[in-house]
Image (cartoon, rainbow, N blue to C red; front, top):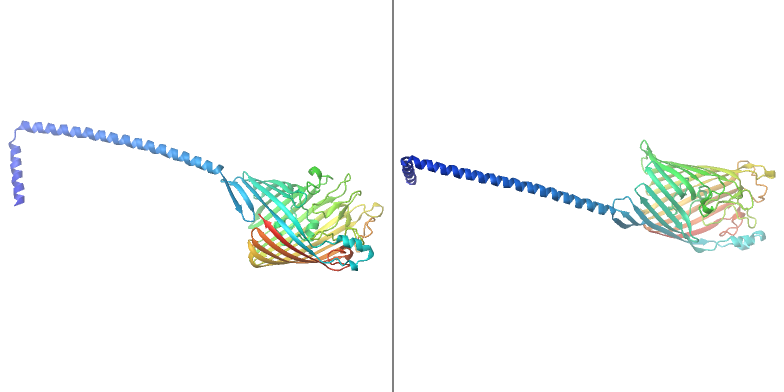
Amino acid sequence: MAQRRWWVRGVVLGSALLLAPVGAWADKLTEIEQAFEAQQQSLQQLQQEMNRLRQDRTAQQTDTDRRVMEVEKKAAEAAASSLLTGYDPGKGFYLKSADGQFRLNLGGYLQTWMQVEGSRKEEDYSAADKVAGIARHNPSTFRERRVRLLVTGQLFNDFNFHIQPDITGAARLEEGWGSYTYAPWAKVVVGQHKPRFGLEMLTSSSDLDFAERAVISRALSPEQQLGATVEGTLKLATMPVYYGASIYNGCGRIDQCPGGIDNDGDKAFAGRLTLSPPMPFGNLTIGLNADHRTFRMVNGKGATEANGVTTPVTGTSFHRFDPIQATGWKLGGDGAGTSQNGFLINGNRVTGGGDLVFDFYPFIIKGEYAYASQERDALGAGGSNLDNLIMQGGYGSIGYWIFGNKRSGLLAIGRYEHLRVDDNTGTYTAPASATKERPMEMRSGTLGLNWYVNPSVRLRANYLLTDVRPGRNTIGVSNSTHGELVHEGIAEVQIQF
């Protein structure tokens, strides 16, 4: 019904249109065309406006992006120039730039000893040794073994510096050097530092396994000297290889040669090579060492070692070699009583040796051996040359981690040492002016316990048993008479920051 009504309407409307005059159709068509053109113009205007808005938005977005980039760049520059501070436990305080190119570290450590000595047994001394033995005895005492400050830093990534004063007694410069690293395989160190020789001597005193370095290390490895070193690490196939070559004055620290000037003009040389071959378990490092020095007086002056083992003898043309035990007494005697007074030497010394470290947790094994041939020119009768003095010895140690590691743990460790000083003939020949001089031999054992409370605090206990021949050199030293053993104990507290 509804559809019929729409159909009727359509017929009526169509009829009306067909019956309308032609003029009315024309007018209607014109109106439609005008309306269409108006709509077209309006659409074009809208499209132009839309394009303009799009262009404005693009320009605004570009400007916004530029401003964001400028802000980000300024923020990056500000961050790069800012300084970060902090503390590494056991390593010290630091101040560094955010980009890592500059860094300043401030640290240090102190080692306090309680040194325990046996009785001096003066009732067993002969009349010739009584006064010397009483004077030579070291009482049980507290000692400040080392008090060190460390100022180190990095400049422009490749340059570093290290300043280490010792303020235990009279302040002195222990180490002071600068370095430039071109690549891992090429680094130059200039200043007062340790020539590259020996495992234990190159180990920081804050990181030693025992309270003191082994006798052979102190006797033959050069300590701090003024000079230069070239060193680096590279790979042979997959095996890391380290090399180091040093040239130095040979007159000891800067306080031992005034103004840091080489006092005898003879340069000394040292070299070290280490290999770390791949192992089925653990880590093995093998080191080879060589050193050449001259101990000859020139214009009344001669080389001096930082550790005082070899020193020029005032008013003579020669030097004296006298190895020192852990607590400071001289194994070759001090010339008091019937003891000898070290070994007179004059000329070149050539030293070679090797060392190893085998670390397979919880065990760690270390060992070092050194052999030196020292000239004794013009020390014989009528100024003749004597056979070379041979100094040789080494140590071996084994440690076991009861628990933990150096950040927090307990290490039990033992060490055996041996040192012999003789010449290369069957019958020892002493210098004409050294009536008491004769071969010397030392055997020593140390038992130790190291408790690393945390990265900054370590407690240590060492028991030392030493046998020296001839025994007269040790009279008065901790329970020793002729040929008897020397018993000593060292308890140490180390605070590191």
